[in-house]
Image 1 (tube, rainbow, N blue to C red):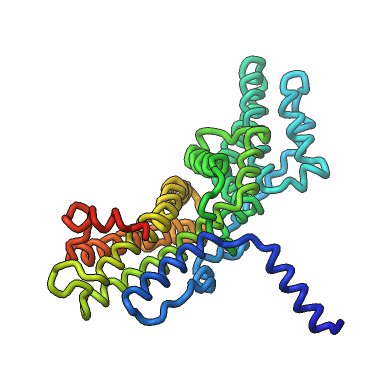
Image 2 (cartoon, rainbow, N blue to C red; image 1 turned 180 degrees about the horizontal axis):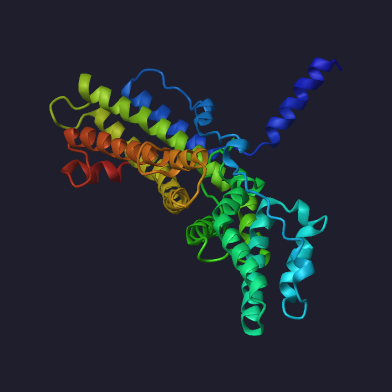
Length: 360
């Protein structure tokens, strides 16, 4: 067997193993049927190169440089009987493992350290040693000031968040599994960021599951792809309907025609029956997702590159989310204008007849 033939067979086998992208397939089928019925120009498939608009900024543009504070000498000053938790946190930070904490673990550590500092400061307040307490007061104030930067480095430096907010090769499937854990994790991180520095980060036992939930879900990236592909498909379909109505109305006399009834059948069977449930699924997922992104975008000390990226996805204006909503509204109007002109829209006399015959 030649190497060329072997390579071809390998590619075919690999393609066969890839899951079908039914989210894109239902869009393409609907668009093609609508275009054929209206004798439109050739429609363009969704080009995944459009997704490059939503490529994450380079990590170096999203990370914040945080001055390192040397606290190792405190071990020599602290009375372990009064401040055992603080002694433990300082020892952890100075260990080989502590010096290599990943960004998300660093966020949890800073919360643990500040809680230990507060406990130790309260103990010193009761037992005296105002000089050491003043040192700890200053350290605690500086650490609290750094918390928003530590938070953003935790998100921008984590593979879990990057994976969840990076576009995917495939769109959401027609019947996606529930993604409640990832949605809740994103919302909780947004609340956490906005509560800093008054509220301290929780321990690792509470933080790690949030990052794990984002890492475990492919649906953040799939949602980005779905929103972009639906924007493309809906705008093309709207253009086809609008152009036909403008130049060669399907029902020129304002009465139902055979082509108008064909079009009504496509509306009932392929738009309302196939595409619209998928649209509703994507819209429902996108509501909480975009809200959390806007909440994150309002978090203090957000790096400008991250702010721009989050709002390009979920902002209320000039964003992927806003474009999707506008494309959806435009498409509804295009269908209403066409069907109403034929007397075949919901609520008109021709609707019941067309809806009854739509199963043909």
